[in-house]
Length: 288
Image 1: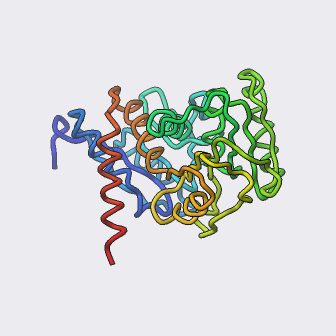
Image 2 (image 1 turned 45 degrees about the vertical axis):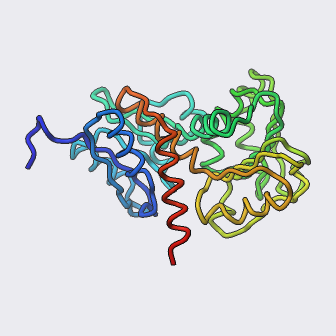
Image 3 (image 1 turned 180 degrees about the vertical axis):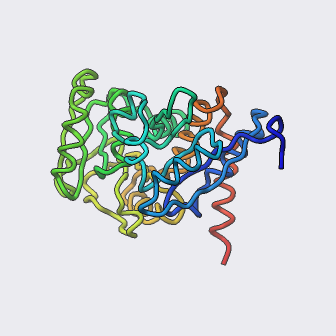
């Protein structure tokens, strides 16, 4: 057993399912690039056992963790301290076990915005944005999206009441940043958006187009928050209608860099890691 002076700080991603997670590779690359000594693992959490698993990981010396579906709301509830963006989302994807108590944040939104604005070169300020879905993923990104001051954000969801509830909780922030915010169904969201974000479960279900093609115009940037095969159908549909497309891999790397900085106090470069993952996905796509 390693001595306390040489033991690695432990981190993990907790979720169900979790075997597909790229987070261990991402954080290993960040650690190597920044000279940080840590380990990062996947933890498969029983559907009814998140609290027990989180407490056990902390008790065993874990320093922090990422939380993925379907436990982000549970993570928020179990932490006594939160960042403003976690409070807005009422969901957390990052937990840090501090001496003064557990601390929760949500880095999904800042990860998405960094990928759109810096990596894709698409400004958000003054743009019309359609956000598809009203679940945990949308809750995580809506606050930072409003802070980027688009002209309008429409939250479209199959169940309009859920979209209305999400918008209601964010209306003060929208007003503060002078953003027109409204909820709609999937069929009547509007037309000709500058940016379309798919944060719904449609990709996981294999559905290619949860909204009509009228939401697009030539050159619309369409982002599916999923990546790899899960995002392929929706992005193919968007491309066929003249949109520019991007999957959620960049968001994944950028939100991980934000989490890494919160844990370790150093911000890693993301471009080399994103390129590495793109190459991995390309290789996997050619394998039988």
